[in-house]
Image 1 (tube, rainbow, N blue to C red):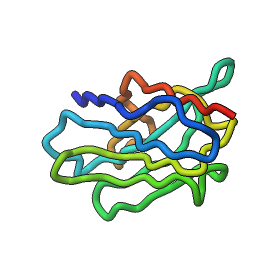
Image 2: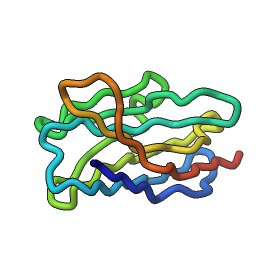
Image 3: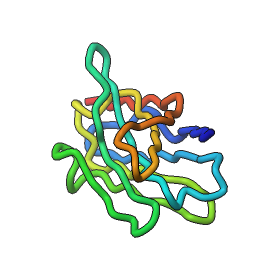
Image 4: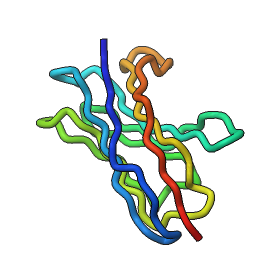
Length: 119
């Protein structure tokens, strides 16, 4: 079983930055992909970014490319989402998720952290 706990959400002005953190309960995520998703009010949950634990290969949704950076810390077993140049369309609950490399389904989810952007 994998437990994920997000932190770092909050209120920021448009154009500002936030760094989200996700702490994982596993001793090693070597066979996992970690990711971030978001869900705005009235919308479905959408993919934001992912990182493969071994090799750190990353993938981003088009609207966040060049603004958001996903990274991981193998010592702390944590994954981060650095969000720069935040836009009015970025506010949402941001969720950390994990899946094994061999499975396409994201099986493990955190409870989410709220990101609000003021204009």
